Image (cartoon, rainbow, N blue to C red):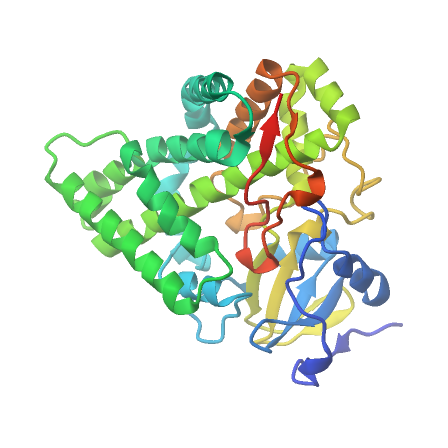
Length: 411
């Protein structure tokens, strides 16, 4: 009979591989993760940027089990909570919702869920599609070359999250600049904190203006102000902190997915041809792209109690990182995992996480991706890369959201 392996994470961290690791190809996980899983199993040891040892989860079954285990904490307020980079550490200090456990997390999530429901997404669908068409029309009018990130992906995702939150779209350049600073791996913890404070100042002013309005708008921030803040069930500071995390998450991740999906389809002509031949299959295609690309590659947790998983025992206080990119390429969960198959329909992927912390904006992200990609490839059938694929620059692993900095195209 086999027994779990209890390993002390204090043993020689200098000998451990780094985590996270850099992608060599924009749409492939770092090859080092596959090597680790094959050599050591679905739960392995690695070292974070600050030298702290961590467990890294690479297996699909193990990840699903851990993500619903209440003994694995998401509480960012813990002084020993791990971080994959100084920038993420700075963000952890000033946001809420994703970094909470139990009823505290559930109480905030309940305030938001109706704004991101399937019904609400359907209501917004016509506006998302209209904006996609407007942006692609502008690309055609400008003529080649064009950058998919700045011309389509970022303005569409910013427009959508602004509408959800009730943030004036004319301010999008400002908050996009602050968010860009927060996702840049080159910034120090102090610089990231400065960008975060600038974003906080902006939202503080916006919330104060909404408090003075006699008739509330229909955005989520308007609802939080008129219903929860006015009713004394939430603080002004919490409204602002919720706005920060939703504004950041609501445009950066979706913009990266649209851009990287475009690049990936252009690099897979047979799958692109199938996508163009069946625009009605866009929903299935989006699921496969979410699995295949897995841009939110690092989920951070800490063991609150001892947990046995994947043949090892995580001790209370141990850092735990889940590599979504490798988890979604687990051959035990997905047949031919390294093959892009838009008809796969692999809805059990963990691209949006799993359990109580599953991404609240997933329905919105799916709608934006399907609209943007279908409109782009239908309206511009001759779309192609304007540069050799090897010149497309990959974001560093420490950026948090994987992707590329720009995607020049022509037609």
